[in-house]
Image (cartoon, rainbow, N blue to C red; front, side, top):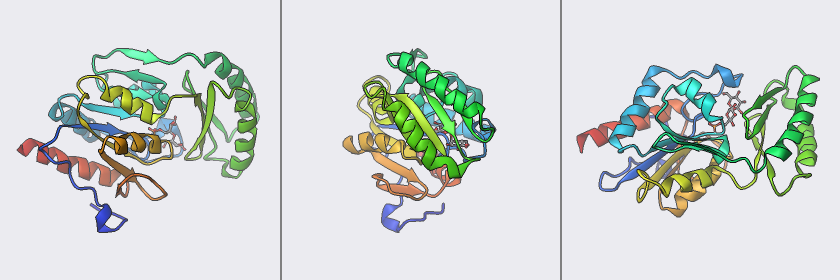
Length: 256
Ligand SMILES: O=P(O)(O)OC[C@H]1O[C@H](O[C@H]2O[C@H](CO)[C@@H](O)[C@H](O)[C@H]2O)[C@H](O)[C@@H](O)[C@@H]1O
């Protein structure tokens, strides 16, 4: 496994004398970032890894993503896996029940119309409409980042109580206020089979910092993938290193 940071940051494997819950981001963590959200590659080895960990951790595994759950299901095809989508605005618990936040939908609809009109004028932009949130992708128009930031900020500022704007990797996320990955983790940690377990969260993006904050508050293991500032205590270089680390953990769990 390749680690970019000094040895002190190398994530040790979770100790078998505690019960752990595993939370995983998808894009940039379990799969490499690619040119378009539809083009990510999820292989059977990754599916098998997630299924094995779910069994070994008594069901306490969840994917915590900015994507919508329907989209996660399309790629992962693991319909019973616990998930939180749209940065915490929707979730599927370990019983398979789906939940979605709707308080901000009216404001979101107004913003949706305006963002759509903007995207219709520029082929290089892509609007991912996730239902309870929007992602405006500008990977193919990187020079537009600053102006889009200003325009979207002005738009979202009309609804300060219900909407928030976040910048990810060549994407602006417009989402309901009060939902984030930290909230998503807390919600899982309050319900079986996650209750009383120590959280591990692996993520790569700015929005994953909210999840790391929750993990740190629970004295868990926060692992940042890649470079960039982070409050996570440990690092892995890329999705391949994440897979290797998870495989080593599987081996350790199988021995116990
Ligand atoms: O929380 P995540 O699971 O990491 O999801 C974050 C966003 O990921 C997706 O966008 C990013 O990945 C795309 C595919 O590699 C890439 O083309 C894009 O530039 C990235 O920003 C997804 O489309 C968003 O909905 C997620 O919020």
